Length: 588
Image (cartoon, rainbow, N blue to C red):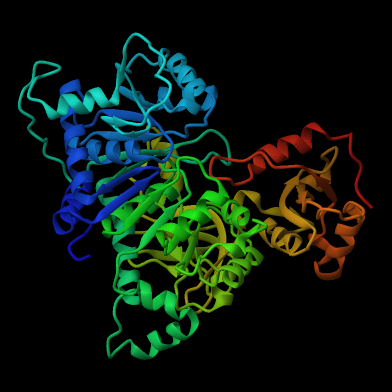
């Protein structure tokens, strides 16, 4: 797909793709199928309807929607208007909904009217009443606005507008607010398009401001990566392509030079899902959305729609691999399983390679960088695909720095810093926080501890704030977690550091304790083996880990508190550990 570049607005990019392929299928969700021409036209119609409702350039519109056509159309409609989308997790509870709405001060809120979302709809109405700036409460039914699927009626409420009615107003010349003809405003690539709230692994989310340019930049980088490996071989690349064909055989041959079919099992309110949506649609591919994830439905869609790129967070992919009858489905179309949003354990990556026969693309990014920082590629070895997050994306500068933010040589652990066209404009309403994260030269300091080798491959060691200091030694939780999860009876692990009991001199010299929270693997049906014990886990650790890295305590749990992305919320685990102090002695 030639012609997409970072100097376009988002609406211009969609119009460009739709102009080239108006009849190509663009979007599939349940029974809805839209071509690129239909998607462009419906977004344009919705933009006219929203303009007649009074939405103006710079106005913020919050959405609380599952991954469905209404979200996609609203995103591009707001981009056309120069307005700002504020996506929220449709499963957020009152505290976070109130926080985001009061921070962003939207003029309108669009909620889902799907039957299963009725209780959330009522909660949103209550919270919306506390936001003075909010003038319009909109509700989207299942399906395409104007073509909603049959189902229970949306509960009536004064002041509620159906999105279908707003769309209908955009199809007519009759004004809603006294205006007549729709004159699209002048929108620039530098204008604010999205206010994306971080996942909140360290507390309340912060709003990262992104423009049209910063959100399109990762798409351009991915497009260049694809052009290198999913186009017809040239004389210059024939040798490298031959090696790839030997690895992926028919999968690569069938995918090369053709539009891809993406199955996104991710939500669209976060940067992972949003970038998958943009990459698929702005590269002229076909995008399949799942409003509600179920592993059986996912593999059926792969089989029926001949999906070539399956995208999900590690927990989602793990659920697919755990299907008892996975082998009965024809998944031979899969070329790539893409994952991000949370660390992917190497053993999970290897299982994907072995059982699904496809490449694993581990992407690493941040909301502040519009998602894309580094990613593995088809050409990378199975080991590099499983154990690294690849090399920096095209157009992204990456360096590893010490505590003084001075660059470190290859092979040394430090903080990962990045800069590029995809860097956010800043944190909304928080210039001091922005200044802490971004320096005067445009380097964003991620807070992630990483190491980069001489070839540029990046390995993530852990979070800087998660680093544990004990006896003058730096301990990186990620290393211990990966080791623990290599144990056949451990499903997931989260390692945190807490102060020593009673404080005192030991704390002053860095005497933190290491706590490992563990989710054991479920016992096989009919199994009679005894439950995993803390003593077994510690003996396992003693065989391989240095003494200073050994956990002081093992705690078995059914699950972790998690952010919307699925990441364990370690600050909550620390709080839990501190609350329970005195109730648990050290393990043997």
